[in-house]
Amino acid sequence: MTDLLPMLRRLFPALVLLLLVAAGLTAASTPVRAHASLTGAVPADGSMVPSPPTAFALTFSEPTSPLLLRLITPDGKSLPLDRFTLRDRTLDIVAPDALGSGTYVLSWRVVSEDGHPVGGSVVFSIGAASGAAPLVADAAEPGLQAAIWTNRLLLYGGLFVGIGGAFFLAWLGAPTRDGATVISVALAIGTGAALLSIGLQGLDALGAPLGALGQPIVWQTGFATSLGKSVLASLLAIALAGASLALPALPARVLTVLALIGLGSALAASGHAGTAPPQWLTRPSVFLHAVGIALWGGALAPLGLQIARRSPNAAATLRRFSRFIPFAVLPLVASGLLLAMIQLENLRALWSSAYGQVLSAKLVLVALLFALAAYNRLRLTEPARQGEARATRRLLGSIRLEIVLVLVIFGLAALWRFTPPPRALALAAAQPAPIHIHALKAMADITVTPGRVGAVNVDMMLMTGEFGPLDAKEVTLVLANPARGIEPIRRKAERRDGLWRIDGLVMPAPGEWTVRLDILITDFEMTRLEGALPIRP
Image (cartoon, rainbow, N blue to C red; front, side, top):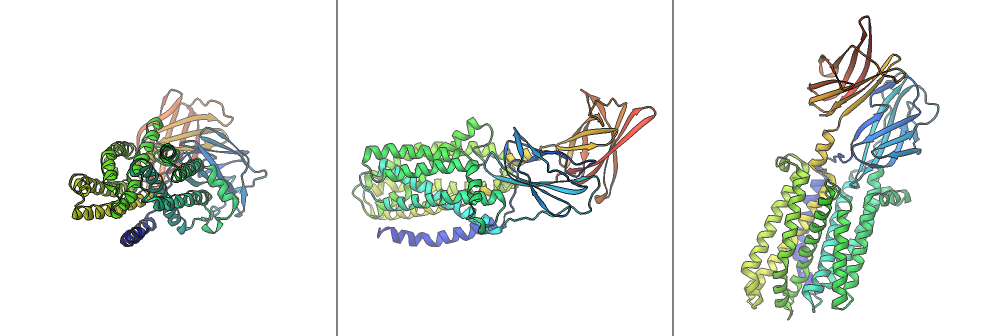
């Protein structure tokens, strides 16, 4: 333990710098919630319906689980919506009785498959608009992001250093026990961080402040997400690694292998990478990546302590580690590159997206780490094994620097909690913008794909006011954006496969567009439908 304290004192300034830099990055980053995205709503956002609906429907880009549903009435009251049914990606919600005229806000908060909470609101009016839509309070607390990042950093450190270190002691460092205290502390930190992550997830999912951490509903909500299974697997892995520290060599080795399997499974069970398609490829990749990090990162502290304490077994341990580590690094690198390609989708995203910027910084640090490892292996390992004092001092200094780099990499990886990958952003950007317009004589379901600025395709399904087929002779779409000074854009639609379609229409600006359909039913009869269409940037 006496040799550990000088090492910690040398690392302390670097750790403080790491915390300050990462805290600044967390505070400066804008949270982006683009995991699951809303692709359709009934009533549609910005629509006006003639009579109170008996049900609401929310359709998302992927399966979700509802966390909080409420209806804000024109007078500002909040009505909980606790009667709902999940149908694949659609959430059917029973509407409250006796809704009057005016503007309502259907506020929703769900958790997506990757374990991240997503929220939003749909504004619609019954009969006539109330003027300004009722306000929905935002209960988010800035300090929550910092707490989530700090806890994620501690969790990574506890899992990788603790479980990887236990494996090192059982397989490479025996028979000495140098580093067992550090590993035990890491496992204890990992246990606390894993448990706390459930509460923080619940706070984030419900949009609650840090002060609500003690409420049971917060913990129930956090555990109900995919993170709950991940935490259970993490705790099991920590328990196995901790038990191995008190057992003889053979059972200790068996338990550490099981602990590594539990660690890889825990991280593959939730998060951006594990839930990305195709999951038959991404989940095993996350598993291999996590195990590789643990094998390398967890070995550094006990290996350094053996060398610093001039353990009689240090030379043999260093030789075993030098021969073993390539078998951990190669899967680590291969799986990391594969996951990066899947998440980025294109090279430009490395500098044009927040996720890519974090990855770029991580890649720079990983390159430095590999350079140090190569220098150690090629120039320092053999002289240190032979007892050369200068080579041993340099190797110890290099190991300390590797530990700092690994911790900084953990801090960067924790930032991914707030930066959806370009894959998810592209999926959200490609989602259509739907609108339903209902009048007495006719109604239309209009879908603009994608629902953002640029070239789009428009599909229109026409029906009578009684939901029967409407056989029109001609359909003209009229779009305008008065707020941006854009006068009406007119396009005639073509009838194909039972739908009226317009291909290659360019939406020049985001915002709320007014939509009008001029429907020629006969040579002497025309009807018009009007509504509002939100277009994303």
